Amino acid sequence: ERPAQVALQEEMVSRVAALPGVAAAAALPRPPFSAEGGWSAMYAGQGQTAEAQATNPWVNFEVVGPEYFRTLEIPLLRGRPFGAADREDAPRVAVVSEAVARPTWPGEDPVGKRVKLGPLDAPGEWHTVVGVVGETRYRDLADPQPSLYLPERQFPGPVPMTLAVWTRADPAAVVPRIRDALRQAHPELLLVRGGTLRQLMAEPLARPRFGTLLLGTLAAITLLLAPVGIYGVIAATVRQRTREMGIRLALGARVEEVRGLVLRQGMRLALLGCALGTAGALLGTRALRSMLFGVRPGDPATYLAVAGLILAVAALACWLPARRAGRVDPVSALRAE
Image 1 (tube, helix red, strand yellow):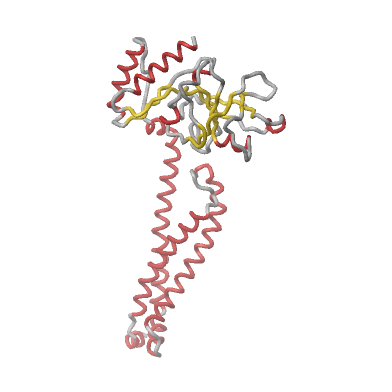
Image 2: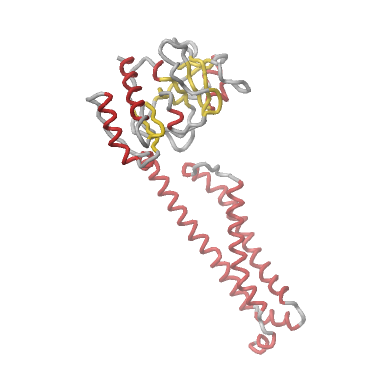
């Protein structure tokens, strides 16, 4: 029965939370990034029309315990999290993410508003919003999903249980203590499987990591080839113009002027390359949108940083031939011709 199940879950969580090396513990339906996925549902907000409710996104909803947000370090932006008072006989409450609160009640305080699962005309209980939390990438790393949370005591249906534990010590050292605590709560309880958050994220991150490594390697090779190519072109140009440099110096040109001439020529090429590369990147990054995380395809800070780095490397590659050009001996240059 659901009340007995919840009571057992609470006893398990309290026993595990009291273990040495454990900072917090909470119950949740499924682990992050699990193959089984999560629960999704339509929702309706207090004050919405039927037309507005029809545009609401589907939400990822979780049935969680009081320490859930603290254990998973989900920031509380307004209001309060669930507490021990949110029991079966108490008024129904909910916590929503900012992606739910902002479009549902624009310009209003969502705390105190009511929300329900399902469309407006469907039967179902209304829940009073008591808190607003930050966004999570709990099921999908690509984009934050709007989320709605219900307290485990007030959810009537059966809920699978996953135990989330935030440890101060090495997780491997805490697992045997967790097994013992579960046996003390109920002799037939078994820890089916477990792992650290890093292990849970290994599979969904495998492909993005490979793509990032591949792109990073190609970018590093490109960054190496760019100054080498600029250096080679400018150095070859300086050799071809040795007689010209000698004549300039013989006619009274200063060494700084000759060096500046070479630097300006090389930096013009670098600026032209950056302009063409930026235009190509603006077109190409749209195809790489699925591989970007936390960066927009047209992020100006990224473009400025990359262009600045390439120009700095190009300036260094141009400075070496320019320094050599300033050391040309006019007599030797003319005699060689």
